[in-house]
Length: 279
Ligand SMILES: Nc1ncnc2c1ncn2[C@@H]1O[C@H](COP(=O)(O)OS(=O)(=O)O)[C@@H](OP(=O)(O)O)[C@H]1O
Ligand SMILES: Nc1ncnc2c1ncn2[C@@H]1O[C@H](COP(=O)(O)OP(=O)(O)O)[C@@H](O)[C@H]1O
Image 1: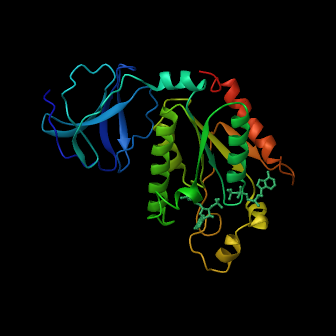
Image 2 (image 1 turned 120 degrees about the vertical axis):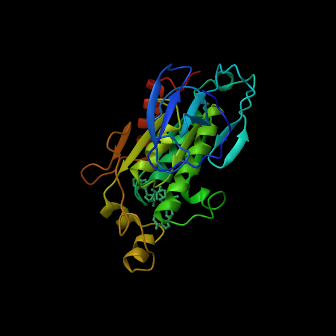
Image 3 (image 1 turned 120 degrees about the horizontal axis):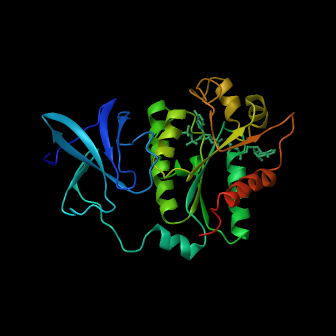
């Protein structure tokens, strides 16, 4: 089977073979119209290689860890003829230095549900324990990296994909990355989960009823949305798909909301139990 470099534009439902050094198995996945690989939960790093197999166009993901043939070029999305460059210092070394494990805490929920507040409380609590975290807040990232994106479904998907990729880099740096983003579509969140090794993506759902968020309305956005001055506002005229099986649910119970600190401590306990607060 001869591998050769191709311009590869993944199409929805494209079947790809996945071969990894850590799994030693071949799996068949669907690529939903982008280079992200939904459902891939294996440790290690991967490059996408376009290959021509018996006249058909097939993409193969090669685990580059342990890949002896360092001269092979890859194509990922529209980036052709690229090659992963490995460094001698790796994530494990950085984690030892920081005395913690890099991961992504993904806080999802309606506008006004308390995502940013919990993210800050969590960051503060970790800081006081000597643990390094960094917050990627949806509102803030849209002030820079993602200022070209609107709130249309495809732009929200790209917003989440970019934040997922940046969060993955922070986790690889050994940092506990806290993403606080509405991320209303399950598929986009799942795609971010699939970017990381199993267990390293911790999804936290702010389970706060719409009426509570709307009553808080700290920025007056619900009021504008109800008045028809903002179109496609999540929870009003754009859907929010709540997680079906996330790691942590922070609930507003019986008309009362735990304090942001109490909520943050719930996440810290999870991180402690899972061993993220030590190298
Ligand atoms: N149409 C619409 N829908 C939802 N939210 C809106 C919208 N327009 C502006 N905003 C403000 O943008 C913040 C959400 O940005 P995100 O990047 O987290 O959104 S998304 O994940 O791409 O859906 C969100 O911030 P939070 O209130 O902190 O959630 C809002 O302040
Ligand atoms: N646990 C909580 N209990 C009561 N009010 C809260 C809590 N968390 C946040 N708030 C308040 O709710 C509003 C929205 O919080 P925010 O963190 O900005 O939400 P989001 O980032 O999800 O839009 C703010 O006015 C904040 O002070």
